[in-house]
Length: 427
Image (tube, rainbow, N blue to C red; front, side):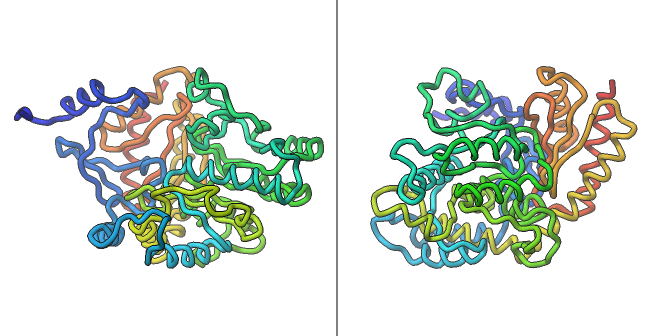
């Protein structure tokens, strides 16, 4: 019989510790409700969300239009598998390919599945189109990348915790330093068997490492020159987060929903999306490419039971429409400038923060302490106490990524919480 004791935070934390795999180290807070930029724990305390489920909740928690869509579709048809057609997938494919400007789309569920899909497409393209000898197609990746935790992906991870003791690892990957086009050019010149270059326009898990403004543009030029596919992993950076629909759009300021201008938009050959593609409501990911690339995949060669299901694609279509209707890309650009300006002003007088970096509403601060210290973790605990949830990465970096629906008044409240909390830790 279920216990009648009060199910407070300690109760839920104990259950997870006893029965769950210990594969995460979450901040000790137990959440029960979300709306917009806010979260509430089981005791009813309210917080500002400054992580957005790693940028999956760009549209805000429980956005009413997205929730309405999932409720309506859940009561009609949820899953057919790809053994049959359904009346939602085709409309989603047309809408999303036009939205991002590609000819075709392969639907999957999680971000890691999207990356695995792009790797398979790239390798087969390399063998069957570029003419690379079978089994010799190479993909260039960057140091300190984060593309997921499946077996293939961890094989080219720089994170020892994700990689060590999980071998044997998958071969076929060449590492170069991030933000180093000279290294990319050198490896492309030396190796004719390279099929693709997989890159994050901003390295989120590496601490919101924002590269030089011309890094992606030069990478595009080099890939085109050497007949190599440019694969953009925009799972975390895409869909308005950086103040442009895609981070590869750069710093353009046009008002179109896709935020493209010819002088700033760098078009990848394959685009990987996930997270905010469903507004944090349902796992949806996708790989977009033009036909000459996508058509190397033929029936039976790749797929997913749940990929392209009626509920997922309906939610994703609504989630993308919300980005347009509420001008969330533009809001992210505007709010991000305010955040970095205020934080840079604070840093001038601060000893605890070295720098702030980012683009749009994907930002991070570097704590003036060793990476192995607990300072950033302790700051996040104190931020929690003060009503704001954030999480460290790489030990001494704290990422700040609120939902894109945040207002200027809410942002200023959050900046006040952040700066006053940091002052408590001044060295």
